[in-house]
Image 1 (cartoon, rainbow, N blue to C red):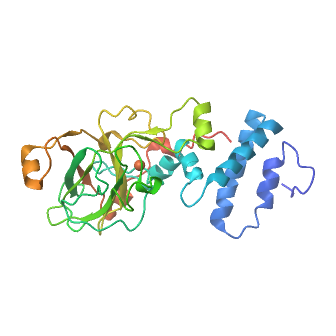
Image 2: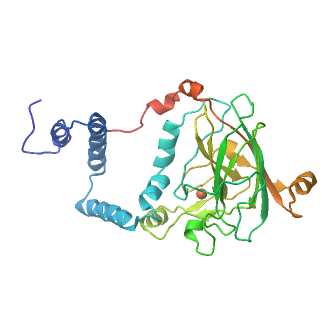
Length: 308
Ligand SMILES: [Fe+2]
């Protein structure tokens, strides 16, 4: 086709932009734009977007950017609530069977949490229902992984991270632990709460227009790192939480849901836990790097589902 330089029409619009982008020397950017532009134009054509709707979309994205800062990332919320974050996670963390699945990192991770000894508490603020968390880090065959690092963070009893709540000390409910030869881990905390993602901005407006709530089911975040294994970013969720089937960011997977039980008398005696202390237990199975290539794309994922 000859170069389209003028007389931009409904029919030639997409080709005109693609041709104009051909001089890009960054191969990946050229590839991204060659997919993005036809999809974007297809949305406009299929919806017969009006100027008012186009302006409303521009205004929505403008407000999303204006609200984003070091402490608030409205664009990540937008990505999360549209399922984009979990899709990127799924494509980039394909797993063989029998290993623990990943889920979203979320916007509340902070690097540099304090190093702790097994049995320490990550709850520094003196409130909440006592909790004992324990389990093992294993490989895909159930063999323990020694020297693995667990980077842990969670909300307070009322559903806020330390970075959102001035009543909590810095680095409250965060800690980094290292496993010994048996791969076991154990630490003390408090029972986390379900919480709303920030909903006082454009993403909250979008959710209410769609009749969706902003809640996430209660969870504890983990990043698990061990030499020779794929780093795993995941959560554990509490069985029975009312939001497990409607997580605002689509992060729940069945195998990450664990029951909240009473700590056993042996656990209470062995770890100095108070009467009535709750307990969560999970064994994480990490994927050996050598097996990453075995975790292919499911067939359904080959089809983008888009209609450019
Ligand atoms: Fe979270």
